[in-house]
Length: 561
Image 1 (cartoon, one colour):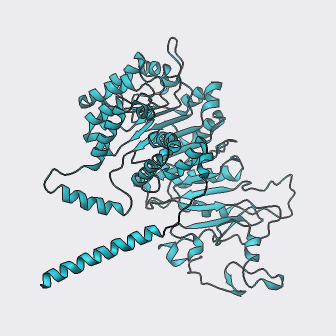
Image 2 (cartoon, helix red, strand yellow; image 1 turned 135 degrees about the horizontal axis):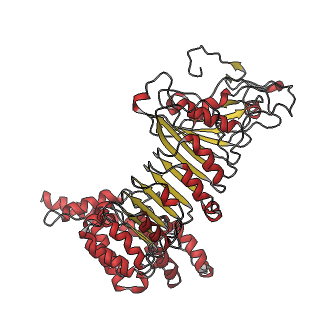
Image 3 (cartoon, rainbow, N blue to C red; image 1 turned 60 degrees about the vertical axis):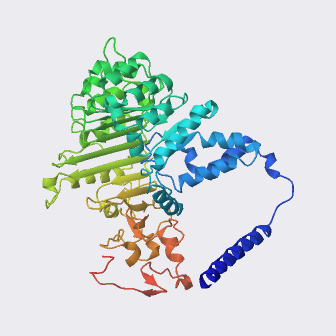
């Protein structure tokens, strides 16, 4: 009797919960007015659906693991699919957005993953383990093979690494019915000529003529020659690594790609200056928007200057990335910047063992350069030296900045943790000096400095603001504070939380003064910032080191010194 009584009580509780749920649904507010969404055209609906599913707007050529988007992509895709089923007017816009850029993720990036993982564990006790990404790829394959209208809308397909490595047959069946595909994540063997990817390569070459990005690694020499047969004529991005081909074959392959805009070379020992030279009967090296060279020791700066001497190449090059190219020295960068008249982003990464020569070098000068990655690090044998050789390289960069030779520069990345502080050590200008004869040194544009040491994982941000015409005199000492622990714990929220931030403002002498970031995170001048602090009544400006008009003095061993 006791057992039956307990059973009846549980049924009563369930009935009570169901009744409460029905009452809540019945009491939910309902709208009975006119349908205002009928006035929305397809363009506005697509804009709304883009916010519902953010990853549907991802049109980058980056792999799935390198393209980061906030939110749970699987849940967003589910919500967009529900929008397509609401009404007939929404189906066209939502379905086009749903299948334009497809991204298959292995897990839910929300609390639903715990629920679904538990369900999969229960189902897999008596069956084989469940692979959710592989199942999603199979479902996508069935959908696009059954509906050619949906298949024609697919432009981008991104998969997890293990899925594209283990499901090559399903991937081949999927891409075989995607005639407008522009980018797809492929297994590593596809880029090296692996025989296991032969079927996938044949399907991609025969069915997908609009591919925009392709890689050619060691072993894919024959695949590169397929370009001469007319495959993938719309390639925009080509990455070549450790490939062994004749320079003439490489130039001919580039010559049949009229839309080529970005080329990356890495780990190619045979590549030298002749790749950029003109030759009779061979197409010239194409004009590019982005050129990347990594570990190419035999290419010199003279070859790049000769390549940029052509007007069409000089006007098109916007981004130049140079990493570990021993043939291109820092002392020759000024000639490359002078030849690249439209360059906007320059990355130079090198490891040095000797200092710059003593003779003066022309400054780094460019009127179009906006972003500069100047990452110079010392060789392992010189890292513990009393006078590291990298000091001369960063001094050369400081002199170039102080000479106002880079007026358009807005972002600077360096591997010197003290570089931002070194900008405050500029020699002061005499206040009553003759201006025509003594031009003040310093910046005349705002600059964001991102610095990082060899043992640091994140960039440290410092904002450099120019001194205005009404700048007041300030202290020549200072710079951003440094600490050996988290800034968010020891310095308070005004320092920007976990990322250490400071603002460097002009002090009226041509130098700069570091102040903490205010609560609203807006850069201000030294005078305006101090005027807004408490204790500034009666027209007296309190120091930024004071609290309520009472000066806070510190010892020589405190944090600020």
